[in-house]
Image (cartoon, rainbow, N blue to C red; front, side, top):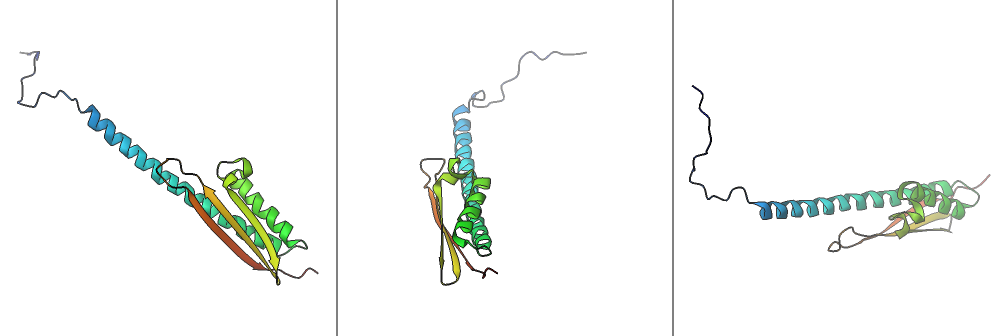
Length: 138
């Protein structure tokens, strides 16, 4: 009653026997490169958002103190240190922030350059600025 199947009948295929390794490896490789490139762009956007938040926080903090430029510089650098690792971090090392006071206003300008993870991709360079009116100290 029970038959044992010992041989598979030929179905008329090309007898490749599942050897699609090269095509599969190339498809996976291309997929991984695209995934890394997209992830790198997301990290660039995160870093630029952190720098934008740093200059905003710097001018907000500095505009309310007796020493606006020093407070602005310290507050902005603290945000960079907390979220990008500061000067020791791979992203924070490429960011410089300068605060200036003129005509009753406080300006903060940050320039940044984030290195790309893959050689064919360009590095990400940008500038971010923020301004606040300096409040008179009592």
